[in-house]
Image (cartoon, rainbow, N blue to C red):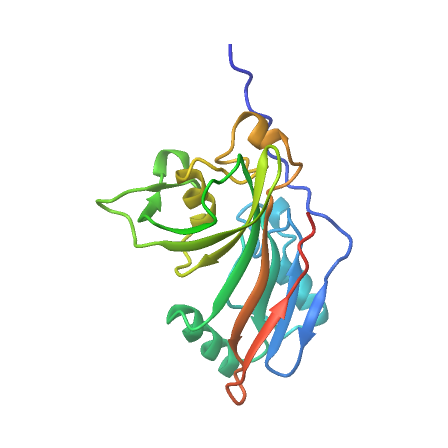
Length: 222
């Protein structure tokens, strides 16, 4: 008889309350911890989120993009309406560049590659996503191995598209789920880590004022 899964309890980390990587008149760049929602959930107990915490110190901050609750790392917010539109268009038109670090289950034999598999929501099991060649939206991830250990491999991931759970499902499709992934990992791949081992390490974009290409980084915490 299979044990029922432990019910999820939202218990976001409280310290540091907000880690600011950069702020100016247009941009607020933050390092989101794993376990904190980017935006508030529907339930009252899910009100604590990065957006709410940012507005405590920066009332004009506006969300531009999101990271999964379990993912940590670099996230940018806009400080005014003009920069909000500017940044939104950059994400929409894929003018940004993102680099993630992940620790995945098993030894990945190749040194680099790409996953080009369309994704859609797995409705009976949402918020899980699934590969679907018939109804899925195009999704492309490039990857390279950083290092290998006995039971896992550290990789850098370069998403070309930005689909929900894209990196998690694409790594699973290779047979190497991300460690600690409560949606897609099982057995030792799930229990080897106390958190999802996925971190948004770098974000490169054009600054809304002047258009200069800038890169923001947050060191990987695992």
